[in-house]
Length: 113
Image 1: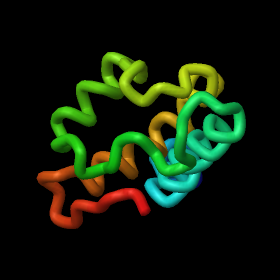
Image 2: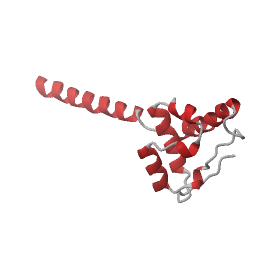
Image 3: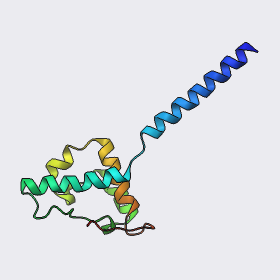
Image 4: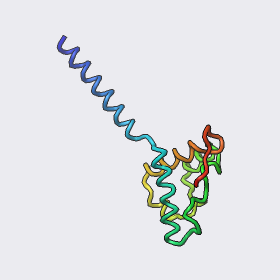
């Protein structure tokens, strides 16, 4: 009886730990939107682009096209190479989540304002 209770507690602890770890790794599209805009503000201050508004709106591509861009890490079309190279994997995941969620073929396409 005592062994089965200990085993049950160990199993619950394992599943809880795994769940917490997986939940922490999810992308946040709100942070992605903020980071995406912040890149262009910094890039505009530096003088590389003419406007602080992002070059590509989320609805400029379909969800599959955004997936390919982030799989290949092909960020040349965004310009601001210096800013894009400094982003962490989590920042890139957040930006991808934002762009993917508001792509041209998404339920709620959006343009950067």
